[in-house]
Every structure is written in structure tokens, then in C-alpha cells.
Image 1 (cartoon, rainbow, N blue to C red):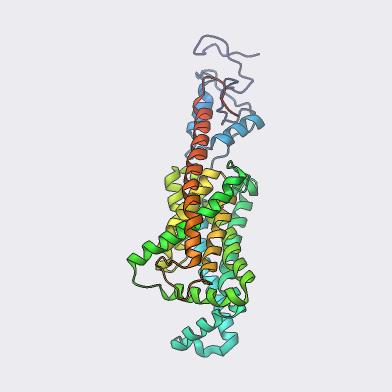
Image 2: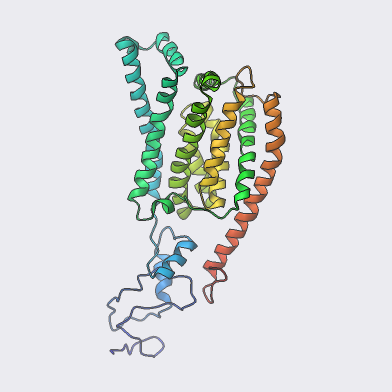
Length: 373
């Protein structure tokens, strides 16, 4: 075996084997399975190699991936934030364009080219069209399909598995806590809507049309309305904005920045300025749930429940309003959701804090064995 007589410690160092870290070190980010060619005058201790390789990453891999890479004998992948930002942001105008084209085709098929000139006739047609089941489908589904294609297509191109890239794993919260989170989430919508009523005089035209659409379909098409307004957006939007976008940002940015930016992009996807302001708190809440849970499934369920609560509220409220009302449904929602929301905050703080301490122990315990695996 050829030796390097210029080693720092004076001891011969083998050149025909790759530098290896200490066996108890949780950091193995270099390509240790390969045998790099080193010049005879190379002077570096074997312990420096993995640290230098780890520092070279602009966005370090999370502790779980580092440990998994160690166990599998593979290097941890270097994440890229710009791809997630590009997909998440561009999906919004593409969805708006596709939705507009589908709506224009439906309008042309219904009344010919006369409505392309705009005017009151076009607005009246749109309001009437939204009251039909076909109109409900046309208004909601095309944009959601664009979001779904963006999330699944981009995740499929990722070297990670589909479930891993989109945070579709089991997560670290107990099952019973998911129920508490679902019960507490509608409080976010109720309170943010009331605060918004203090900032604006009235609902926007778009929100009025959506409210009128739900009020019509909740009586003659309730299950279809719940699927299209609650289930589909709850799954699709969380898949894109929390599963694809936020999960990648959490690997590259501080948690507050990642959650906040993904919530901002999520709110902008609602297009209407008043609606955008109204859903920012919900986006922050859902982002916090996905981050602390380590999975988007609780956020998907909470999103769906929040939208379902908004649909159900139209059955008990005579007129649409942003202000807090004291109808039987709102009172029940506050009575159940208030304590559940406070319990949800405690659950996220306790479970998330425990996971933070575990990960910190895995990363910083370099001189000895990791405390948890």
C-alpha cells in the first residue's frame, strides 16, 4: 500500500481509500463511496473532509436526510429553492389564463361573439352562469387542475420520491391532534374576516359572486359544492403551496421566512385584493401546521374543514357579510372552535419544540453518537 509521508500527524495515511469520518459522527455528506485521487502533498485530516463538504452546500439538507444518507451510504442531495419559487409563482398566472380561456369558450358557446365587447351584459351572464352546476364546475376546476399539474409534474421531476418531495408522509403529530387542529382552524377564518370588515367597507364584487354561488348550490347541490369548494382546493392548494413550495423553502430558509412567503403566494393565488388580505392569516396557520407536523396531511384536512365551514355558514346567514354574526352556526363554531384553537396552539408548540430539540441534538452532537436516530 502506498503511503503519504507528508501527513499532518506524521502517520501514514492510505491513498487507496476515501477519507472517512468518525464512525459516530452524524455528518456524512461527501461522496465517501468513491476513491478520489489525492496528490502526494495533500495535507488534510480525514475529519476535515466531511465538514468541508457539508459547508459547501448553500442550502444544507435536513438532519433526517443526512442520517438517511449515512445509513444508505449515499451523499445528501443539495436542494434548490429557485425551482420551487418558479413553479409556485408561475402557476398562479397560468391558472388565471387557463380559467379565463375556458370561461370565454363557455361564454362563446352560450351567446356567440357579442359578449366579447364586455359591458353589463357580460357581468349579468357571469352571475347567472355561476348559479348553474356547469358554471360552478367551469369556474373552479380549470385553475385547480393547473395547480395540481404544477405540483405533481414538478415533484415527479425531482430526484426525491413523490411522497417525500410533497411532504405526504405520516408526519410527527399524533392522530388525535389532527381532529383538534381541524376543529380549531375555522376560528382563523372567522376572526380574519371580522378584522377585514374593519378595514374595508364591503365585500368585493368577486366575493359577492362567490357567496351568491354558494348560497344557491348549498341547497340544491350540497355534496357537489362541498367537493368543489372544500375537498378539491384543500388537497390541491396544499399540495402546491405547502407540499411543493414551502417544504423546499424550509430546507433553504429560516422557518418564519419559508412559512410567511408560501402564505403570501397562497393568498395571491386568490387574485381578488380583498380576498387576498382575508386569507393571509389562514395561509400562515396552515403553513405552521405543515411545518410543525412534518406533513401536509393535517393542513389538507384543516383547509378542507375551513372551506366546508364557510359553505355551511351560508345556510344560516341571510346575507353575506364580513362581520362576525351571532347566528346559531357562528355561536356553535365559536364555542367548539375557540378551545380547540387554543389547544391547537399548544399542540404545535409542544410537538414542534420537541422535534426541534431532537434535530438539534442530531446535528450538533458531532463528537459522539447521536442521542436519537
